[in-house]
Length: 229
Image (cartoon, rainbow, N blue to C red; front, side, top):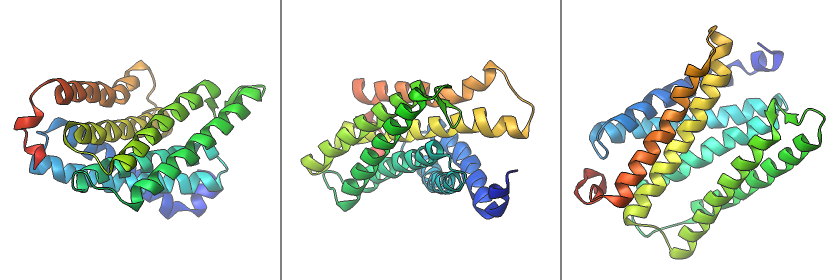
């Protein structure tokens, strides 16, 4: 363990604990009936756990001067917070939080672009162990999310199927990034596990996201689902 992590050990414990609980509760939320009490409880636990995990990740990475990880923790925080607020707010309502989230997303876009350009100009084309080709797609995703935030603000809120789809894809992408960090970075440091099978739990959230987005947008499931309540 690095001296910096030892110095901020309580934050490290919160980060690991929040990430582990977030992965477990996120898996439960994706697996159970949408709109059911268990889905709501597990979704709330996932929301709180991911906020803690993302905040502590950004905090620790800042002291280690790993600025791409600062952005990664902020990204997880942003995605989960906006996903949860989407279904917490009443339909067709908005507020100052959405404006703040938009500004945060744009700041992260700028950060990823700057780090990507720095990595591209370096001899290794890496920054914090990440290649520049990975940073620009994340910046593009965030720019898309910011554009959708702007649309919600201008429209005075969101309702119906788009509201559920917004909640769904942001939660799943947040879980995807958390799983990617755990199975490619944290787990190999704890246990001697390697190999292509570690990719499976990382891509599962994206596969389930596609399944549920298709079901929400192109079937009548939403009209008869308790999630409307």
